[in-house]
View 1 (cartoon, rainbow, N blue to C red):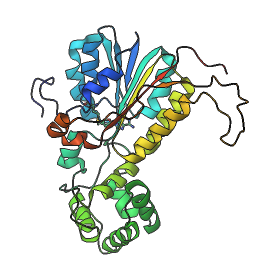
View 2 (cartoon, protein in one colour; view 1 turned 180 degrees about the vertical axis):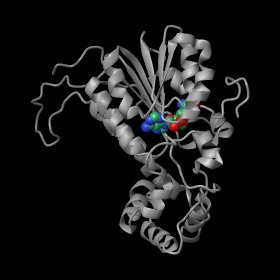
View 3 (tube, helix red, strand yellow; view 1 turned 120 degrees about the horizontal axis):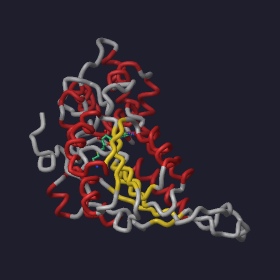
Length: 318
Ligand SMILES: C[S@@+](CC[C@H](N)C(=O)[O-])C[C@H]1O[C@@H](n2cnc3c(N)ncnc32)[C@H](O)[C@@H]1O
């Protein structure tokens, strides 16, 4: 399927690579956990840049892991790959040994989007969208089995679609005649209902909403942040790349809370907590995004935002 040199022929261009390298520049010795290994573009570059670094790479997509296993072969036993969701695997890894860094580049890979049979693209004859092909819920189940109200909720909350109700109604009406079998048919419904003319395809936000539900993408991010908050790995750098505002908001708010020295309620007249409660500090006051050159070379970088945080060296006993 792929050509023989995985280093040169990765089916996915890593986004914000120079920014990721600079975020992890001060990595200490230990293990870096790449929660979304994908095609190992970020991981390979970080392993090259930090010769003492070891890597644990996680992905729930077996095709991505298979490719990356070959790509990372030259790094030998510095690399360990695990299949599964990062929210399930991360807590154990954080407890296992000192963690120097945690990277996550959320969302789907270019290959997942482009491979017709994975059912992510508007042109696909399938309706799947599972990152883990053996995962439970598929887009077919969501589109054909969810209630009108639940679909409307997804479109409004996860797609921020103003015509959420009309779109949900159109889907329910169409499927009452026959099940909606393909992403192509689903995209057609969105095209009929949603306003055209913008830069993005009218179905984009609907697909985003369904994908988030199928893969529990926001729940995964929340649980990753919870695991980090519990473990507070001393000195570890965390770099998280998000692709839309719902994801970014989760990361931004959590990094902000972790940076707060004073944890008195906002209505308190004066500080009584004594301060010193920050778990670390944000390394990026504003999120880093793609420059013009990257935007030209890789349109997928358009909405990517990287935020970095560093946990303090010793646990906070405050
Ligand atoms: C945007 S790609 C990562 C690309 C990678 N940084 C690179 O340079 O090639 C995201 C990858 O994360 C995986 N992924 C997304 N959410 C995941 C989760 N909750 N658990 C495990 N893997 C996940 C996807 O299967 C996909 O392969």
